[in-house]
Image (cartoon, rainbow over all chains, first blue to last red; front, side):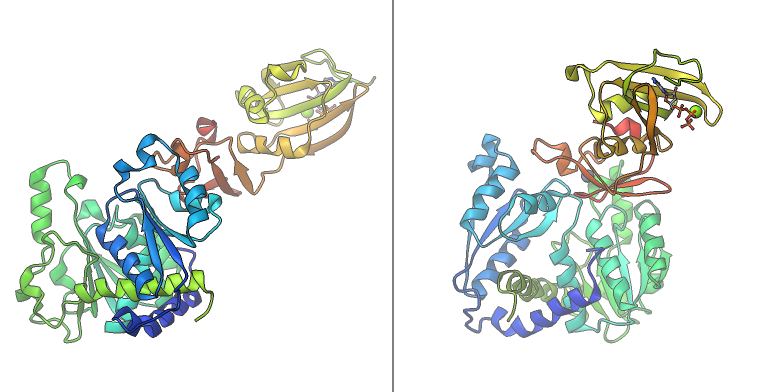
Length: 297
Length: 154
Ligand SMILES: Nc1ncnc2c1ncn2[C@@H]1O[C@H](COP(=O)(O)OP(=O)(O)OP(=O)(O)O)[C@@H](O)[C@H]1O
Ligand SMILES: [Mg+2]
Ligand SMILES: [Zn+2]
């Protein structure tokens, strides 16, 4: 994702926009004869469903190996072998795997395109694309003020997202507890790419100054003490009462599932955008599939 | 024969001398270029030899074989100043410095325990190399190795 050019991203986002009516159900046969293999070595219901929806909305179909426990994976077959076999069955492979670099390796062994649907703490490029698409559709993808909130240290998806945002000249506020701040090398990369970043540990500091609020999960596992986790999680919780002075067109995003970062009272406000964001995963993934499988629309 | 100086190990008639190896790295050099006993060549090692240029250095001499530069360039990972001398009829007939390749496959282990190359997969580790300072970036997981590369040799 770090290596994506703005041109490549813009192409996908423009295509996603053209495909959106089909994502909403208008009949489409664009990938009628195509079979997509969904290989999920980790549970990720949302991502899997949205790829499945994407191929089916385009008139194609999908295969998967169901539960990992029931498949040859549990008999110790290597990913390399599985990929060699499956790439003979399907026209493209969507892979989710706990090891970093798994998708890259899979593409070495595959005779068909491999789409990375998340590899360990590594990359998850379609999440980044759908996040950008959401901003394009619900706000504007240029020179906006955006706050990235929560776990900015371990969350690699948010790192990719920040790199991608830097292509669009945005102002970024980084909002996280001290122990979950964005790594220095990423911050300096971002600054070198010519964007402004400011750091704070309070959401309130930035709420009135932003067009996009991007919330992420703060995971228990990152904390040694349960009490420390509870204290931090408590202060990164967004309630509707905090939004009274927010910009009118502020949008609030979250990759979902949320735990309790966003109070249910926010859902009813005009700012809540996370369910739309989730839907936008479908046209975005449709665009990726069309690009890889057809080459043109 | 024109060996001017006293040699620490006996002169060889024909073969390869790897000179100016960082002190203490001779065994790693042998490991990297894969000239273990199985090849049958006589390999002699001098370690911690006084050197005008480097203080101390190691030297490796391989009898009867002229190793090619591709095989030898990998040494630069742990000994960037190493020089290669090809010996014929007791004379140095050619001399060159090792040069860091742009890609390192195998040899070094990725230091990210969660990297796919550190699992049971058949894939070899692979790094792209930047020079000065030497930084290896894993082709698979993007992690970088910039220090103590010798510690990461497979
Ligand atoms: N016939 C030989 N057998 C074994 N080792 C040799 C032989 N001839 C030269 N060497 C070794 O090869 C290396 C290079 O030899 P050379 O005579 O070029 O030395 P040098 O002038 O010190 O070279 P440099 O400038 O590279 O330090 C030295 O370590 C030398 O001891
Ligand atoms: Mg000398
Ligand atoms: Zn790696």
